[in-house]
Length: 173
Image 1 (tube, rainbow, N blue to C red):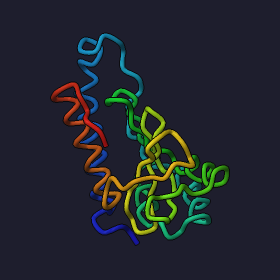
Image 2 (image 1 turned 60 degrees about the vertical axis):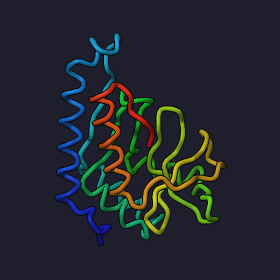
Image 3 (image 1 turned 90 degrees about the vertical axis):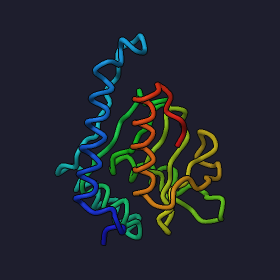
Image 4 (image 1 turned 45 degrees about the vertical axis):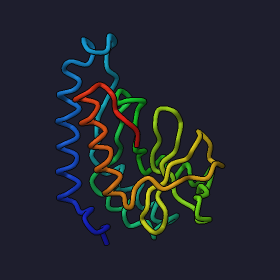
């Protein structure tokens, strides 16, 4: 069952909005910043994504929001937005669960890492749907809440892109 408000149509609209914003930003990126942009993209789900989601479900079927996300999106790579933002593909999420396990959250629970920023901080989803961020680039560091839901996190990421396009400064997520 999809997270409330995180259905396929909302996710497709988010992908389109982010892709358009990034595309416009990349048109002037090199002139504005003095170096060429990297590959900034939202990769849509494909058959490989769906196969990886099946493996992820074997680990963490309680994370309906991640399953809803990966039904539409394979990954997000935004290395040139601020310090960089990344939503990992489900194959990476599963591999990280196998290798590192879940990360500790401030409230004593554990979360599944699904993304990171360019500084190495990790983004994790808790079973209650909240999104958390590590204070440092460590799998052992407790993570603090940054969004009330995955949709809220994606909305914040969209805002970061808009702010970066408007001002050259992304703020933080």
